[in-house]
Amino acid sequence: MNNPNFKNKIYLIRHGETEWSRSKQHTGRSDIPLTEEGEHQAKTLQSKLSKIEFKKIFTSPLKRVLRTCQLAGYLERAEHSDDLLEWDYGDCEGLTTPQIQEKVPNWNLFKDGVQEGETIEQIAARADHILSIAAQIEGNVALFASGHISRVIGARWVEFEPEKAQFIALSTASVSILSYEHEWRVIQSWNDISHLN
Figure 1 (cartoon, rainbow, N blue to C red):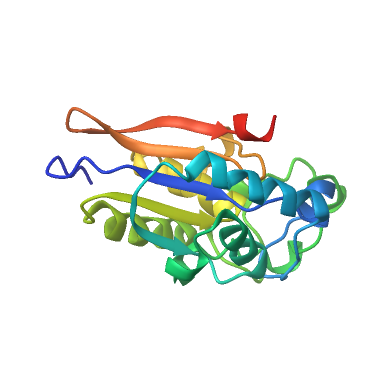
Figure 2: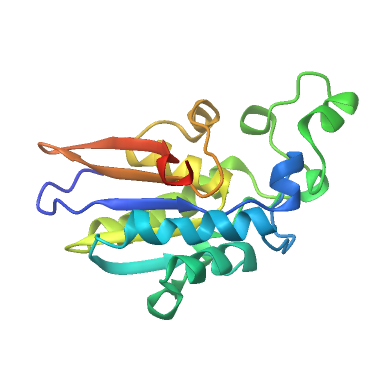
């Protein structure tokens, strides 16, 4: 997966807060809008990203991500990518982890998966696909997406099994940087929310 010819950086940007992200409900394909706080968070991304020159910008087509991209100032330049859609949680959509664990004790999304939704292998395949595109671009790339797909993208960048994404959490409106050290892929920074303070 390494590509030492290009030293671009991939900026992974999670959408701002929604009602369901605040309540920790699994929000896959439900098109939940940003809260007022989420809109504020998204606007703060402008100052964080304004000095970075992006060669290419990709965004999930979900409206919480599109709105974040818009408020950050990049929607007009962004291309929609279904690779960046959040995990299809199937029967777990709208539920919190404790609610699911009432029926399935010790349930873990990354280990146990979901019924009637996507497998972690399918999520990893989407992550690998968008990374293969981004890695070929000479210049910085921005990926606007949701939490769990972003975590899997981070894990796959450094060739971790997708299940390892459970160990790298992301806050709303966070910025993470995937880059290179010498010829190796590295996570340069993760879950930066300094712009929110």
